[in-house]
Image 1: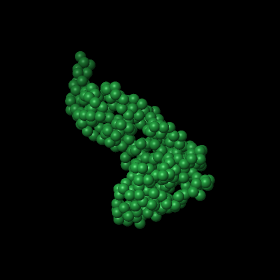
Image 2: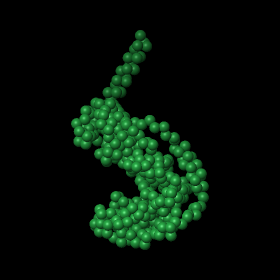
Image 3: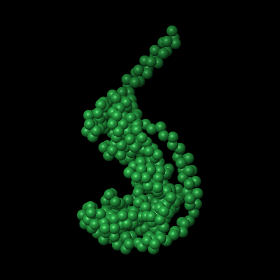
Length: 353
């Protein structure tokens, strides 16, 4: 009798607690990915770089290739719709200052400088006569290519003292790597980059249309300081459902069957969502990212009462160099050559004539 009474009391307590907490969370799209912990990843990264370049050693001597660095380039200004002529190396300073925080470690800024120079040369070779949409220029100043901002606009957009504190550092990152580019099997690469991978970068074929041998998934463990490593978007359940239905038709989804109707499809090697199924309809992770304006395709849902929170890890497409990962590596003693070779698999850093 006492045993039965105790069980009744326990059941009553549980019932009262459940009634007092109406917004119990319902998690879905959780992924059971067997990822090593941060210490294991860091150890693996260090071992790989030791094998390739010799961790913490001086810069390696670079081969000189038969490529002549251009003096002046055409750049389409997306704000003014005008084509400008800019000195090749001076252009890079405006890119580095626009694409990477100036307070980053200088080795990370050097990595960005080499990446920017390589990307520019890649575009010059791919579009020798320029692009029609850029009025005959091979590159533009927007995120369609790589962001460039004039020195005057940079000074105006930053707090007082920014130029004095950081411009010399930016100039040095470009000048000290002058003429240096990345190649793969003798060809100039397209060195993609992004803000924050979330711990592991993506294979190019998992995000874009083709497999690129130097854009492979690698660990990126030093991103703990990235401001957008974790983020979320909140909305009501009705808003969530209506947005999906507006994009994919009148699917049979309700607030009561979301966990049943929203199912995980494919997951990339980098641990991000390639596809999900909503009431049997396949939706790509990229489309979900665009629909809900998410920071990345590494996302999951938490339904709590009348609210849904979409949790994200990382920021950007995840392919190539993680900028916050690069800064973290630099802060941990890696030089720009080691950073670049880590994120761009099998590449060589060479110097133009």
